[in-house]
Image (tube, rainbow, N blue to C red; front, side, top):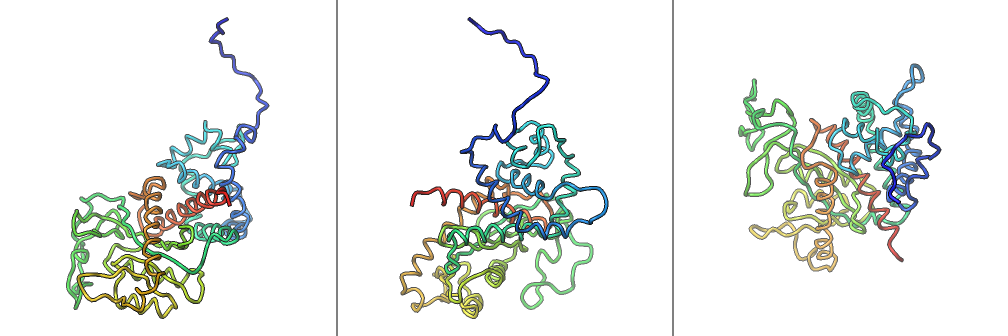
Length: 352
């Protein structure tokens, strides 16, 4: 017999969110990892809040919501708050009860800015890396480095002549360059740049990632101005603040084939496995290229493009939603934390 299309809402509901989420759902492992990391940085979170006044939004719930925004490519905080109203999976992951009120989008953004000022994303990434190191998923011995362009949240019309251009430029021998005279009024830290010979120069920032070669996990990251030598300077800076063994290797493309970079890396105890530049004399000679590990590093180096692909397609970093290096680096660090947790889940589920 055909049933009637009749709906009468019940006055009470006796289901819990825990029962509604399947035990095999991928977010359960991500929630467990994030809870362990949040316990480690609980002291740092407490230092951001006063002991007086009204209770604020729990920073743990804020971070879980931001992780959801990255994992599910939710393009704005307002849309994230809308989904928290009706998405039971999102409510369970964040830690909201069925009858708990969802925050206003403006309140959420203001509380997020407090986490940005406290550099919580770096502490969270460090906690995630400690988990990976405890599972022996990091080698601390073989690395790769590369950079990618992130389009700025600024239009081409905002690129205008500066009111007070400098008398001497930042080029060789004080040569005045384009960015010395012109700049973006919307995002002053963005610069016009292109990494290839072809294509148009666009207002962008330069994102750098240092990858551990064992399982393709990001070990460090940075955001700098889009300039010619920024990749090499950022690579040295990331190596200096990354945990590594006394002797390590670093794979990179031919853009890092520079004498100063090679010398700086060797002073840090790093053997640079850099692809040789063919149009001029290379800084890498047969003392490095004759070893089998050199070719292995160049093959492994290509895996860093998987990180950039995930960040731009899933992590919504093809074009940033924020202005300035500080917020962009915070978002990049949080997105890499989400990526590493996904990789840890996948690697630990593989058969031995």
